[in-house]
Every structure is written in structure tokens, then in C-alpha cells.
Amino acid sequence: MDFPEHVLPSVLHALAAPIVLIWLFAALLHLPLRRLYDNTFTHVYFGACVAVLLLWSVHAGVSPTLHFHLLGVTVLTLMFGWQFASLGVALILVGATLNGQGSWSTFAVNMVCMGGIPIAVSTLLLRWAQRRLPHNFFIYVYVNAFLAAGVSIVATGLAGAGLLWITGAHNLAWLSYQYLAFFPLMFFSEAVMNGMVMTLLVALRPEWVSSFDDNRYITGK
Image 1 (spheres, rainbow, N blue to C red):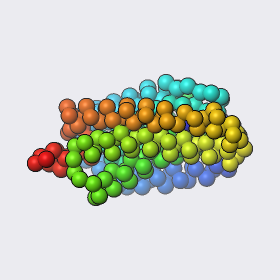
Image 2: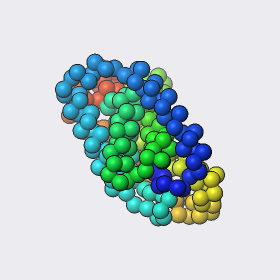
Image 3: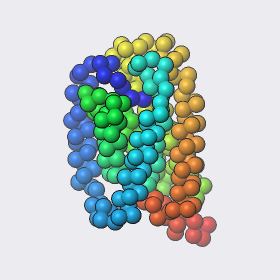
Image 4: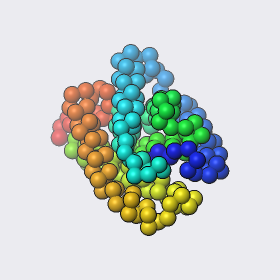
């Protein structure tokens, strides 16, 4: 979910801003800059960012404070790693704000909720699966794409609902009826969308997916 202007108190925006700055600075420090010299990579990367921007432009809402839309951040994370995914979400939010779909005052909070949470969930689940689960094509698709995407959007929604409840924008009963009830639908939609995209990518363009390795997931299986 994305937060419109004037919904949350200014103190939350002030707290989120340094978090985003530190996060983006860390991403830049660990960014594999050599990949930007590859024309194929840059075309795919910025094309993916534009696709996610278009995805975010399609949304629905039950009130001015609750907007539903798919994220697609799990795909960015699996394709490019958390560093490029972080910068990608920042670029997407800049584009959405310039297009009138957001406000600069809510940039940091939206960045944390719609970018930080799904990137963290997708990255941690990927690392856990690589260490604890068999290296298998179907494990990668169902756990790291399907499940990670579904958990990511639920975590994002819970964080957003929690902020609205704590700040008094909506009470828990109203949120449970108008927002939390849609979580199963959002989980399934996000999971299927990301799972289908990643399945096509690893089958047809595995070289575009930095987290996928034929030798690890397919060869000898």
C-alpha cells in the first residue's frame, strides 16, 4: 500500500528519511558498478523498472488512505539483487511522484514499506532457501518467487495497516473489515504474478536473473 499525503504524522516521515538515506548509501557502496557498463543489463534493468512503475499505476482503493496494487519487487530483487532493486524502487517512486501518484513528503515512508520490506523478505528467504533447502528449479520458483512474493505483500500490508492503526487514522475493527480481509487475495495475486514472471525468465532468459544459476538448480538434477 502507498500512503497519501497528510495521513501519517510528520514525525514518521522524519524518522523514515534517514533510514532511506542510510539504506540507499549502503546499496551504492555494495553496488556492482561494472554491470552498468553492460548495455544488455542496463536495457533490461531500466525496462524492468518502467514495467513496475506501470504496474504501480494500476491500483484500487477503499478510501483515500488505502490503496491496493501489486508490487513486483520480488522480481526486481531476484533479477538484480537487493542493491539494484533498492535503487530501482527509488527510481520508480520518483517516477510515480512526478506522475502525480504520490507526494514527496511521503516518499521515505512509502520507500520503506513498498521497497524495504519486500526486498528484505525476498533476500532473506532466498538466502535461507539456498542454505537450507535442496537446490532445485521448483524450489526456486515456488519458494523464492511464489512464496516470497506473497509473504512480501502481506508483510507490506501489515506494516501499512499497523501504522494507520497506531497513528489513529483507522481503528482495528475498520481495518479488519475493509483491508485485512483482502490479504488472501493480494497474497495469491502477487505470488502468481511474480511466480509466472520468474518462471518465464529462468526458462527463457536465465542470464537476466542474477540469483539463478543453471549449475546450481538444473545441471545434474
